[in-house]
Image (tube, rainbow, N blue to C red):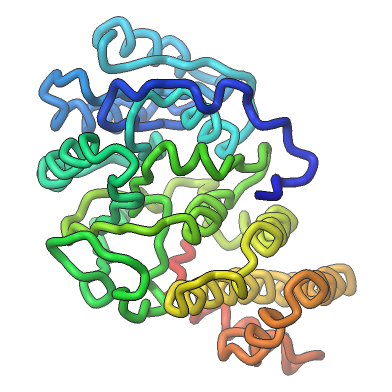
Length: 362
């Protein structure tokens, strides 16, 4: 598999093992002292001191608070379960990479340090994960569960489930998957991967870049052959913190990073070589969503430079994946967003209001 350009070489110890844990929970932490305790405690709540679970607190070069000290304290209190890993700052993707490299769990789950896991849901999922360890290479590649948007300051929450998409109560493949709604994309919050699969495909996320979670839930999918869905509300996703990367102003300021991630997704997955038509359709839809977001924010910025970036991004897709380009150009998400002039910009602004509802901005 082609690696990301200009990234560090694949870690030489990436395949080290053997796996001695059922699952590794990786917690990327950057100046997270204010809220990381709740995240750690939510995992310990269903751990029951069982040593087949490990929590990797990845301190990504925190300097403004006592994240490092807290991570070390947690390791001291639970040395058989928690490991504190300190590294230079490299961004969220770098912390995820570090977690994969150090994981001793058969499965791998990323939990952002300002989010948390639901105890009852995890008590439903954990027995299945433990059963899969005995299946070794025949184990389920990806486990999916629901996530919840927690708008804490508003006292609201929204459950995102996949009951209309995935069969329940058994393992299945892509050919048995139903149609995803526009709000039902798989997110980092909803997936648990088999660790060795991530290592086998040499998944390495770019450093110092936001929105890399899109790569994490896109690039591995053609290598996922078996799936198990639990219709339980596993992951609680905190929304509303100042500076969060889905905020409108933040999105506009970081549009170049979104463009970078989109191009990497184009590079990494040749959709036309995917065997399953249903997976191929999903990958098309996800990439259309990414292109739509690019168009929405570049049209909102509305400068000659931003309009040029939009044209360049479409040109890149056309050059790298011409058939995908044709399909995405005809996708309803992108037809109106890319019209020229004031009409196109007006549609783009209207598209933003729609995108806020569909893709959960702010």
